[in-house]
Image 1: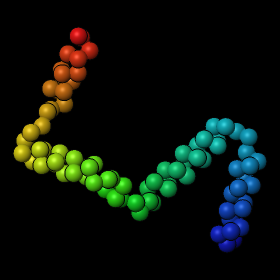
Image 2 (image 1 turned 180 degrees about the vertical axis):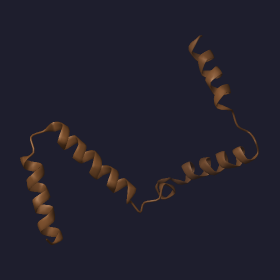
Image 3 (image 1 turned 120 degrees about the vertical axis):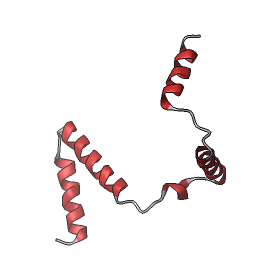
Length: 82
């Protein structure tokens, strides 16, 4: 079966399917496959400001200017207790 015929058959199957759960699962599976096989690099999607901020964050991490998960949890708890 060639690509065109295969796509036509898949479209028919989807059009005839009346099970919402099955349709949602099929959509999730196809979307997951698409994302896993995408050649798009996340860095290519960033604008110059976003890329500069990311590089700055990496440098801060290398310099030890970080906050631990535990420290951040405590800080968030303080925010919500005000």
